[in-house]
Amino acid sequence: MACPYFMPTESLEGGAWLHPSRLPLGGGWAGHCTAPGHAGTKPELAQLQECCNLGYATSCPRLPADRLWDAVRFAVAREDKTQVILNFVCERNHRPVQHGQLRFELGLLNCSTPHRDDRIQQMAACFVQSHVARTR
Image (cartoon, rainbow, N blue to C red):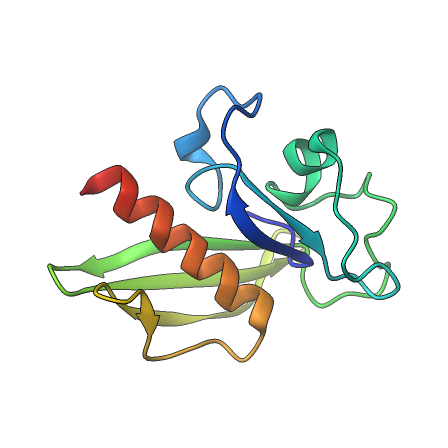
């Protein structure tokens, strides 16, 4: 589960995770915050490792008290040589609030069914990128 206010932008190699492939986005990512009043803030490495990449980051000083989601989960529903279909779940208080599927065409990593929230869409693209790098 990644923080719903995290906008991942690049793979983060060498993080202090025991099992990086088990992270919610399939690996560690660097990026910036999109929380209201903190848009564009680049979290320090400790925050990336303890909050942004993991979700339910109640210790994060930028996390708004009034929010729709606490975390976002992704899982591969189906895949073949040309596409990956992801299931996603946005959670609040450990319960699903929103869910659906996103279909990525592998040639260009283009999503034919994009999410309306750019953050969720970018996280999904990062998840697919990590998944493809790990499995192909």
